[in-house]
Length: 205
Ligand SMILES: CC(C)(COP(=O)(O)OP(=O)(O)OC[C@H]1O[C@@H](n2cnc3c(N)ncnc32)[C@H](O)[C@@H]1OP(=O)(O)O)[C@@H](O)C(=O)NCCC(=O)NCCS
Image (cartoon, rainbow, N blue to C red; front, side):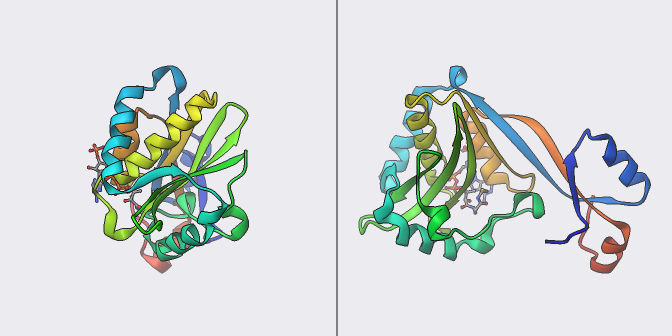
């Protein structure tokens, strides 16, 4: 992580101060919410049905850990965005599902996981940690299907607030969440200091 970068809400007063001092926006991200009363159960069920053409969709259990870790390891470099959207490699501990951390997957005919979504639960609130689809299976509706399956299962279990987020440049996950009914309600910017911009040339507006 580049220590000097600062992540703030786009309307945070510190942003104007930092930009006046020469800091520049090097990446953007968003957060979105879906509330239980707004969920279109039929639409999400249709997404799950479409996803089932590509595999079995179900909640992850301890027997799936090795497969989940293999998918995670193979896709670590695939997450767009900067520090605000960093995905840390799963460990045996963070891949294990509990009452407070649940995972849902799409499994091929050999029982290998080709997509997962992990969700952290706090009371009646669920926050997506990450969602990933194996590189060779993207663009087929599988990512949306596994997220839809997770929302429907958690809805049945009494979750009322669903939160998620991502990098502005990650067009697929934004489109997927819009299809699920999430509404963007926060925008975030990552600011890089002038010296870092000059040194790396990586920052952009
Ligand atoms: C993001 C990701 C999970 C999406 O899964 P997916 O199975 O490829 O997505 P889907 O096929 O369900 O498509 C979802 C939507 O994104 C759109 N989409 C898919 N791939 C796209 C692409 N490369 N560019 C633009 N839009 C794309 C689809 O058209 C669809 O839009 P719609 O709902 O309006 O029809 C997958 O691309 C991935 O694993 N990326 C790497 C990890 C990552 O970035 N995860 C998200 C951050 S946690």
